[in-house]
Length: 189
Image (cartoon, rainbow, N blue to C red):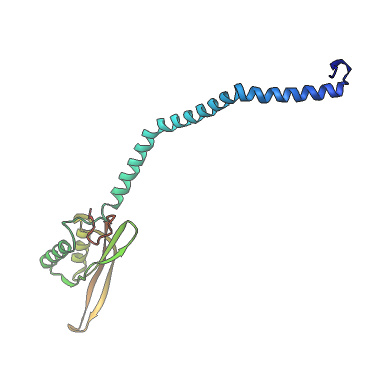
């Protein structure tokens, strides 16, 4: 057997370092391993707790943003009772009361997106500028028939009557939310 006293310092240091390393491995496996695991678990739980404490505030902010978005988009949404027929009714009643001539009101054209169906209706009305402006104001501000996305006033020569007439061309857009089963008759808001 080896005598510890007869070994050189170099060999003693090697044995000491090897023994220290062995001790650290055993100590880690028996004691420190659980401590490190508990520390990491505690750190993870604290992060979850902070996240949970912030959840009501984040939810409130999300609701505020959602309501603001709904408010901005509300003029685009089509009401199930105020569809193309209602638009025709509003425009024709206004035209008859104000001596305007409804030239064109074709069917609504649709563009489908992932979550929405965007409907666009083109309306052409002929008449005096102030009456046409009143109609434009009525459709933009008072009636919920959609959103007037574009309008233009054009002076056109009518060959039949041999005179120039003022024509208002409007594009009214509506949004309809698609249902998950992708039917054409979607929920209209």
